[in-house]
Amino acid sequence: MTSEEPAPPRAARPARADARRNRDNLLAAARRAFAAADGAVPLEGIAREAGVGIGTLYRHFPTREALVEAVYSAELDDVTTAVPVLLARFPPEIALREWIQRYAAFVATKHSMIDTLRAGWASGRIATPATRERITGAIAAILAEGARTGSLRADVDPDDITSLLFGVFLSAEPGDPPDRGVRLLGLVIDSLRP
Image (cartoon, one colour):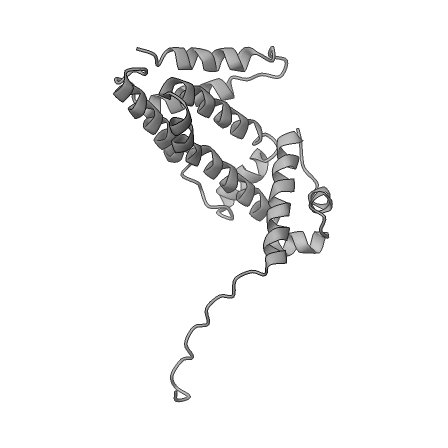
């Protein structure tokens, strides 16, 4: 190789096992903290619960936005990839109910993260996710299987169901009876039966 030829790129070294474990522990602690919180979540508490120092948290997630984005992405993956497992385990109408419950839990954990997510999306520091498309795709897979078996309507646009679900989640008010959301989601599910 001459001095004018660029050096070949080095392959990225895989993370050490302890570094991967620390990252996984941080994500798990952050998921629990964001799910339980009504307001801001102190990063120091997440690090402490994960059994690491704040420096380790910042090595893996240099900003609050980076941590929130990782939690959001992991949870969205969990929700959208659950469909094949649910359809293998349950009839489509039950898989739909189970999936909607998972999706409702996903939405519920976003209250303590939403301000960070919105600010990150607006500034471009967090990539705008294809959340609606992924959620609609998950619904479409369940509806297609339900239409095939005759247990769910075949004439429903999956994007309409996504809109209905967003409406249910956005309509929640502080002080609503605890079972109101469950009842509203039940009405959405019932509307999909033939």
